[in-house]
Length: 265
Ligand SMILES: Cc1cc2nc3c(=O)[nH]c(=O)nc-3n(C[C@H](O)[C@H](O)[C@H](O)COP(=O)(O)OP(=O)(O)OC[C@H]3O[C@@H](n4cnc5c(N)ncnc54)[C@H](O)[C@@H]3O)c2cc1C
Image 1 (tube, rainbow, N blue to C red):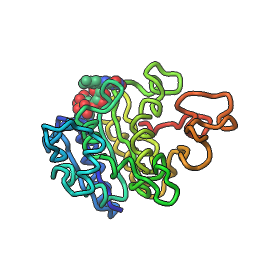
Image 2 (cartoon, rainbow, N blue to C red):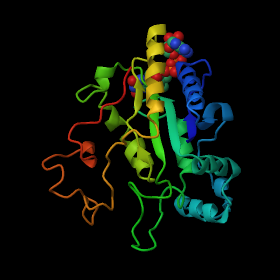
Image 3 (cartoon, rainbow, N blue to C red):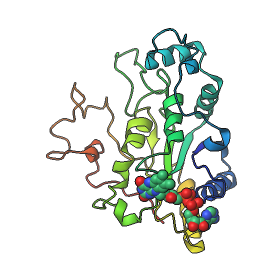
Image 4 (spheres, rainbow, N blue to C red):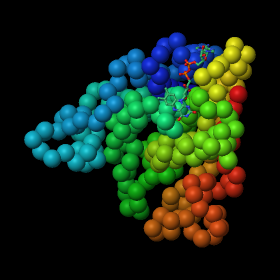
């Protein structure tokens, strides 16, 4: 497999960087190819600007339209094109970060803002049906994705009744709203909880658990998010009454009645 590993942590001696190095070593041992984008080390620019699209600054900027125009004409800035090429090359994407304020570090959010442009990751129209291809369908369909994250919070507090919110609910914007939206199959996340205090034993166990998840990367069952165009939603894209009857909230977008449990060390 070809694996593209996106990494967002500012410190090369962090537990995150150690886990990334261990993960990349494992992938090579397993015979996979791997490319890494270490966003801080690359000095990645996380903010969208008109010159990403070679847009005339005197003209009003419509971000989605300008990004699509630049994408189809090959005018996107070189750093964005380089990341898109890595993604096109890959069979699987690993997105690794420390949980910061219930989400990704800003540099990583800005990677998605700038790389996932219209025509590439969204706004892809099916020429036969005229429907927008998203939520399970899109240009990135066929690729796998897995979130690898550390959190200061202990595991129970990220469980179904934990004060920090259930992990898959916290990751809904990334896993469902971005990766699945763009058509990728999303594997259950790999979490290292309690990551501010990591003993040698705990680190060794995290490395082993990550290794198991990387061994399973080609075959593991993805989260069973519902397809937009699979019949579960009505014409307004509201879940039909006969699915997840009586339930509301983010978890209804996967047919599994119980929240998907993360890997934990
Ligand atoms: C701005 C901000 C917002 C945050 N928001 C949240 C939040 O919303 N929810 C939440 O749960 N947490 C939150 N946190 C906590 C954050 O998720 C953790 O600090 C982070 O996950 C720890 O990972 P790290 O790589 O930065 O750890 P590091 O600080 O690099 O390391 C943690 C510990 O691991 C030890 N260690 C053991 N083995 C190794 C090894 N092989 N290599 C390196 N270090 C090792 C280190 O000595 C250290 O004690 C937040 C933190 C910040 C800074």
